[in-house]
Image 1 (spheres, rainbow, N blue to C red):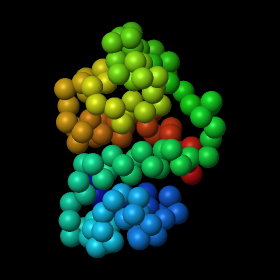
Image 2 (spheres, rainbow, N blue to C red):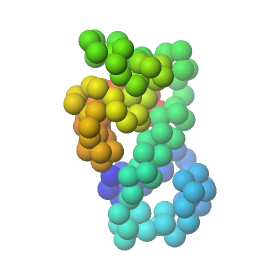
Image 3 (cartoon, rainbow, N blue to C red):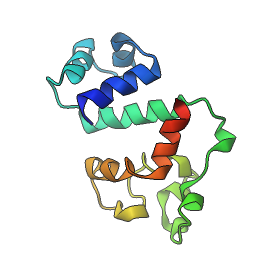
Length: 127
């Protein structure tokens, strides 16, 4: 995640730097540093931002579409997203089986998930 996307997500969430710092459990200076590009944004902060943004959306949870349905997954029963009935949070879970992300680090996985319709649809709904 780069500093511009970090700033865009904060703006879309409608949070001040101070409010976002409290949500993320970091200092105000850390948030300012992320936005200025003085510090790299750690993977756990990026993960939390996506989680907050997606779960702040305005659509009802009943309208969420599970990844295994949208992607017509054939190995869903072996996947953590299926096991925990979190098909809309597949991008958040480690060890999911789609797009060969099971053995990937968070940084590698989220770079794949950023191009996926599951995460993109959730982010679009929030607007």
